[in-house]
Image (tube, rainbow, N blue to C red; front, side, top):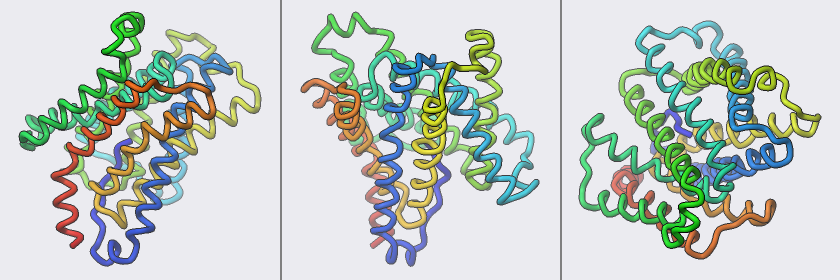
Length: 320
């Protein structure tokens, strides 16, 4: 999840670096459980990708909207026409389409592989930042991109063509989830340069437009079932926990860590998400990855770290 980046002060870095690391790790731990919740809702309650996406976004929108109303009042909801357009586009692609693609990827690929494939997103961010933000793509980033893509291929089963051919949809959906995540991130970077708004108001509008998109699509696809899913109390608690815990909790922990750590350093901890999800998936759901897929996951994480090295070097210089 993309967040509004706040640069920490030198004093905060000096006093709270360990606390910032703890917050970043807590955020990563929260996000690592997202796919497990989705897989359980799909397997135990037979919810579709659209149903999970709709209710997750609805609950998030309600929670964040309530917080904005209490914390900022009416002024927290005032936005310009330009912001409205940007949030609408990002809400459709970066929230609605992303959530559908992500949920389908979990169902098709399993939690471990789906979480790993989404980390092709940083490659799209780098490639998009070149024409849109004027950020150069040097040799080091080209190598990191190749390493990342090689890892994605191994995770998808490039060394086992039969398995890859049997599930091409899963691979394409997994890449789509990474692409829409990158779109969300890029548009967030662009707006951050010109729009100064608290991150919770931004998040509210993004989820609001995502919800506005998911509602008619869901009603067309699912009918009345979208609004009346077959869930018992445990199922509703599971769905609410997905919205409040892995989603909102991860966002709050990560955003808080940026008060103590430079963004590049905090982001490095999120690369632990694929292996953590893979381990949890094996322990809880008895679903894991093979040796080649673990190698692919390692390459993906290495590629993401490589893409962040320049930002990391600059951050460490500022810290020193």
